[in-house]
Length: 198
Image (cartoon, rainbow, N blue to C red):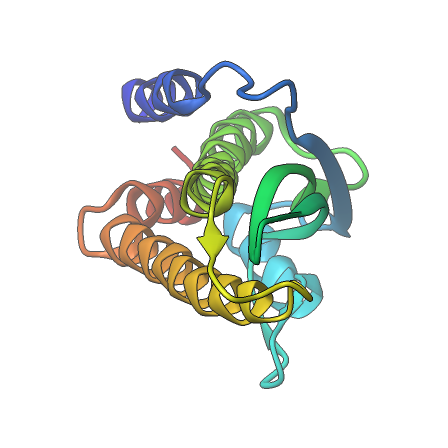
């Protein structure tokens, strides 16, 4: 179990590329309190108190969210509009469980392994978001739209490209979760280990 956690921590570190174009994401961690004296109690507490996701308000053990804004420089070149530069401001927020109060030593040990593995899992979601932002840069900086002196058509084209990349990011996150939660998947094993107290 520890080997799997260390593997994912290493994977998360390796997936973080050096900051490109002079920017890097701001990463924040928020926690919510869980309580219990056993693995099953801690697991149940996550189900009761975990962050809610989407309109369905389904609770999760952890969640990665982000806020992305841009400073873009559109310039008219002849009768065309060109996106000369685009600087992103990306804030990624990881919401993770934090045990409150004392826990028996043996349970604390399995909780620590579980919490580290869960944090590493969410970090991969963060890396997928960073990858999307870098792909947006590649797909849009230098984009030129002819016969667009008012720089309105270029925004329509960018919206189309961004929608495709956003959908790809969501799909990549879903695919990653599918593997992690599959039988014998990393997160599935972490949950079982927590419930079994090992």
